[in-house]
Length: 215
Image (cartoon, rainbow, N blue to C red; front, side, top):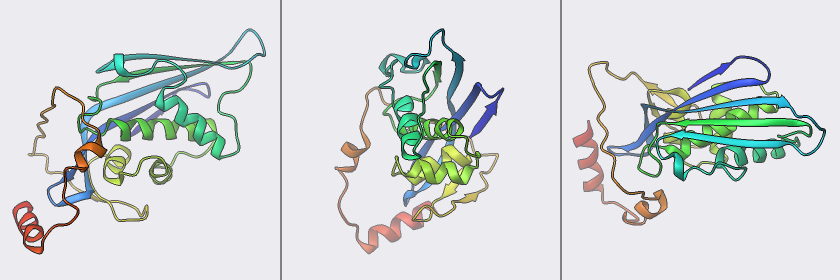
């Protein structure tokens, strides 16, 4: 994940997509993919001291399905994070312009919600005046998104093994000779729906086979 600050009132957050549940690494292995969600926030003073003005502009992949108002997930997450810290995200007498440039297919298995969570949490931390440390972004993001494999890949990049309870992921070097190919379906599928098709338990034989095949 890359955070580029160009001033106190203008900053950019760039977060990669991810693919997870690799082989037998269900909810534990996450790999960053070179497709990015870029969010730019510009803060300016408004002409009056009235209610804050929040605007959202979206472009890129699936941009028509991204809410372009205050109900936007990233914007609402910024507000929730600040509220949890006892602060107000959007102050009176200011304009907040969110510009979202999305390359990640939404709802199609490439961690779009995880990337949006990381972006929203990072912006929330900046607005709250917190120091931007990747481990803090990771742990804060897990409070809102319960998939550490996707979150770790979006925060740290590369291939990650995720221990439980928000412990620091273990990064595994990705061989430069390996190229990732992604096949994206022509329909959306929510994580909860896809997981409902899985059995509640697996036999030892199935588990051994999965690990043997993957290794």
